[in-house]
Length: 325
Length: 156
View 1 (cartoon, rainbow over the protein chains, first blue to last red):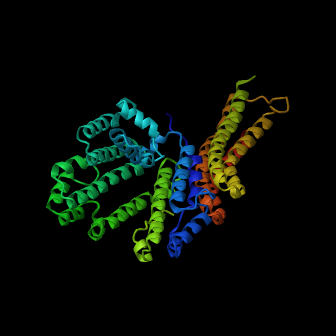
View 2: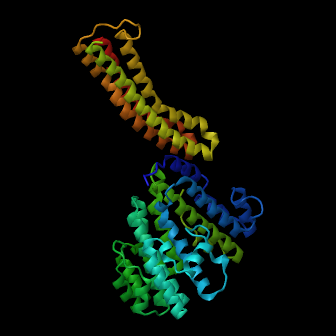
């Protein structure tokens, strides 16, 4: 497919960016006394479909769908944004494999924004028609499903498919012409490997398990061998290792809590994509907009959940991500 | 028809073709961006329309030089002048600045307009400043127009 002229798309994204939450908007949302007040504020800003959906989660889902729908209408070759879609695709494949293996229907576990519908995925898995998947996914999916059928180990399926997802993101980054997408893919693999290593350390997983779970790819800023060795020694050793990597700024967040580290990772990506606000052409601004919207929805979700649980504003604020605009 | 006159006509064609093509590309590109903004915010139509039109002037400059060339050569009056090959080539050379600079400046002015439309999309109050960026490109199209005009009128 020839390279699409994205001038119209980027200009439309520029206009849409004006509707995004600023830091002041998020502060106002945080200041709402209850979840209902926060939802009212979202609706006043035009979020949701304005009619039936009056609960926070439905509004957030609607906003995510709306974002992807807009982008799909703007970008002819959606494979240029694979790097953002693979997470949902792999999630749905896992859900479908578990459904086929267990025979228990779970339609609510599927995410809409994916390459295949739930029915298509179920058909592929039932018929083992792996050739209908993209090349890079055929063997890992077949191996993961065989393992699931032989052992019934759903956790190992998650581990294998999550690693495949990271590798797919990395490869999508490599395929991309956009520097920002390449960097995003590398950083995503790097920080996710660190998160996985920390979780493995906390749950006392073996080196073999970590070897299966971690994505080993060059240029991510993480040496998997050193990371596994550190994880086997203890959480302090992992943090010490992180201090030696490109992600050393995140070590302090990691010392505090995993959720703070996750917040730091998201903020780092926001800093990475911010220059796209000044770019008037190419896929970069569109990619950045989707990421920023998802990040914005994550912040709003954290605020709503915090309000629902009655958490103090300061505690909720720690989970709120940096804004893009 | 004499060869000299053929070169004169070729000069007029170069001025109109290249400058017009530059404007068409520039206006087209800026038009896409303008449409993108208006899709989300129809209230900005007037502002983005002005920015879209900025790269259109090169085509007018090319038309003007082409017209002057044809008038001076008597092509429009029905009684063409007798023009030597040397004069014809000089006329062609005189038409080149507005043609070539029009093509290049039209394209780049279009790109500058796209960026400025992005500014207006986010900060409409900065419209005046945003308009200056593509307008700067216009300087070079005007300089080329001036030289082509002076040269054509001097040669013919």
